[in-house]
Image (cartoon, rainbow, N blue to C red; front, side, top):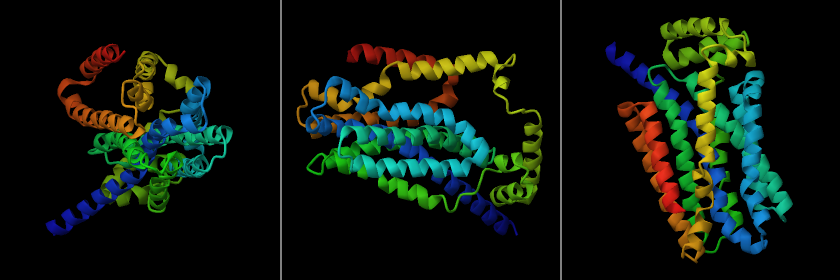
Length: 334
């Protein structure tokens, strides 16, 4: 009897991991789509004879789309559900894959990089949200960090793919290669359920109970249903909730941390890394991209180390150490 119970628990846990892995493909595409331009731009700069302004826009068009995608993400998740929002993100990733690879000119290319950026913005919102709402509380933290790790793996994978395609295939195949993870995401969408929290919010209690039963078993599912219902009672869903006393300061700190992390210059450094390495003496495109791959690989290792270190040091101490280390690194790089 005990063996049967353990087998059932293992099966449910495997299902949760599988569903979370599918959602994390959105995070993987986040990193892949953002990073693939860094290897491709070396060849695009020559083919299109890019001016500094054109180069800057080619590099940033996806990030511009990302802003709007992130702004829309929360609303789409609330109206249509988490799963449907992931479907929209997958469609946007598919469009940018096809039309950036086939783009006859810079205008078309930038339009569909913007479209891909919308997908990135949606994925940045919905993937961690979905994983957090679908995962049992005992492994929720571990599974949510899976999305961040998937972003880093996507970034590294894009650089590695760019390196191998730099030996003759060209930049169009670099963007076309994104189609492989898009296909995996599209296939995975057939097996993942809707978020039980969203289902309860839409008064679909039985559907939510079915999802939670499949994840946790009947007894735990009933308890989680009640917990979700209680939490929803104290939420009005209004934007003004974020500015209530006790929440306002935490919100400001969190937003400032996220803003200054991006504004520090580390992200542009990663995007422009192959061009920077070319100016530093690695004239061959493949050599410059290879150096960038080492940099991306180091980022993945640091991310793994940070996952372990955050439990040892705590969040605040790790933020301080990370900021100081980044400052030293940027000064030495300049």
